[in-house]
Image (tube, rainbow over all chains, first blue to last red; front, top):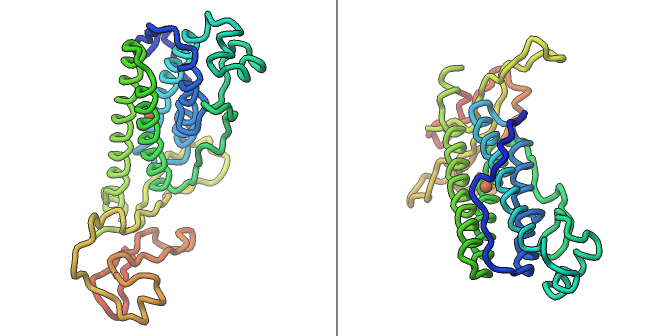
Length: 189
Length: 89
Ligand SMILES: [Fe+2]
């Protein structure tokens, strides 16, 4: 169960009218290394990871949902006042034809979201290594997104999100260290 | 020396529908611990290395079915080159 706070984790401001940027940002909404995939990946792992690291995936999975809201807000702000003609010019014609301004879970190339974007192998080390890789991939995506905009306000939000990926990666690395410890083995045998 | 299998006691509820598994295990193979492999580590004789898939005893960690072990421990290399190289801790 979650308690909802009606605010964003970090303020999202968009300064420049640039609907084309929305097309690129949607990668972090419904792409393979996006926030939806991250949230579902971690929240799903809560059931079968060893008890000592469940809190980490619970907390990070929850935070990814907050990131998802931030990305959604960015995309919404960039497209909400665009005409059909502007959507077309921004390369969002195919999106507009199917969804109008509605957000949709697909990547920057328009490929719909799929559960195959992440895995749940059941081997804790394997799953945590996938989590670390996913965080690094999300960090890289934010870098490429920052490279594609010159809007300082949008960049500020993206910088925050990139920094959180750095922290998440570190926490998952610590989870691996926790699982490597001999502590439980000693106590049990 | 590290164990290549860890065990823990998961949460067990009195309301669980199936008889509980009191102890669960997961694998922590040797590559998690070695870091950059140092020069000059002990080696298997070539014919054994070919059979086991590695030249390095420090990386040799065969898997066994944890559900079929009486004691849920981990395999670890006991530092010997002959005979029983692995102790079931
Ligand atoms: Fe993350």
